[in-house]
Amino acid sequence: MPHPRAVPPAGPEVSRAPGKPKLLDLVRERLRTRRYSPRTEKAYVYWIRRFVRASGMRHPRGMGEEEITRFLTALAVEDKVSASTQNQALAAILFLYRRVLRIDLPWMKEMVRAKRTQRIPVVMTREEVRRVLEGLHGTPLLVARLLYGSGLRLMEGVRLRIKDVDFDRRVVTVRMGKGGKDRVTMLPESLREDLRCHLEAVLEQHRADVEAGGGWVELPARLRVKYPGAGRSWGWQWVFPATRTYWDPETGEARRHHFHETAVQKAVRAAVIHARLAKRVTCHTFRHSFATHVLEDGYDIRTVQELLGHRDVKTTMIYTHVLNRGPAGVRSPMDVPRVQSPGGGGSHY
Image 1 (spheres, rainbow, N blue to C red):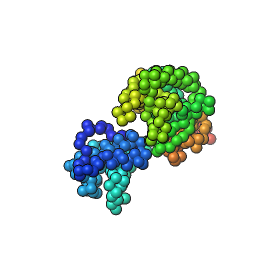
Image 2: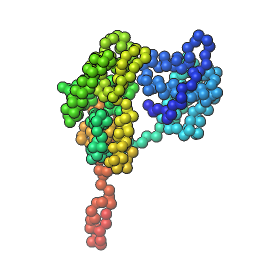
Image 3: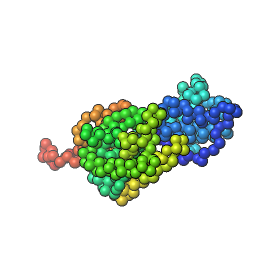
Image 4: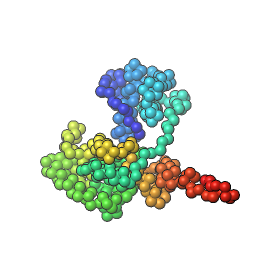
């Protein structure tokens, strides 16, 4: 799900009657009850706050179709946001009315989502992947190799836990991927030893954190209440921990966050520039390249669908448009050798 381009400084919450919770607090509560991801929560709260501000700080109960349509039109016409961003704003507002305010007006069912343009994914050749990886080092290199070698999304890679990497079975388990789904993909053989060495260093760091009174990590949902010691156990530690610890004010624990995704993005961007690639390569391009190269190697599309975690095979089929046996693998009639005409009067194509 796309994210807002810029989040304004936090302002006053929507006004409320004395003794009642703030509107945005109710939004967060409903989102967490329904197990929405923290990133979705952040995006939805952003769009609801922006919608209220754009409407003169009026309470949403006093607004309706006219205000929502005006807001979404301004996003498309004045701000020129993408279809994905416009749809995300609409989803946030619909969640507000349906799930928080319990208002399901007839016109809400007729709200039309912006049509997203389907584009061919950017894919690197195997040589281009090698050149980009050569420009990386340290943790960003390990993460990038995992994105390409296992077909992971960036956040799936940096959020891996120790328990989700099985060296014996050579598999990686992705927990709560896009859409809240779990899946299993392969652990590249060429990455096993380097990842083992990396985890040995992570283990030493974790032991030092525990001795210093820390060693905690954030746990999903209410797992911390059910298993009080799990947040300090080795299996729940991040595969790629942050370099610094932080103090969690709610629990009073000294924790480590996972390696921040922006550090990987910056490193990949610099490596792409150094490799002098004209393509618009991002961290997600490694996933696109993984899918395309696996299909090129002859694996069936259903297998690739499972590895990528796509709900519909139609999503996976987009990669068939960039295979070498697609347009690049078809011989143009202009390149067919000339043949002698039947009457001997010259040659033609």
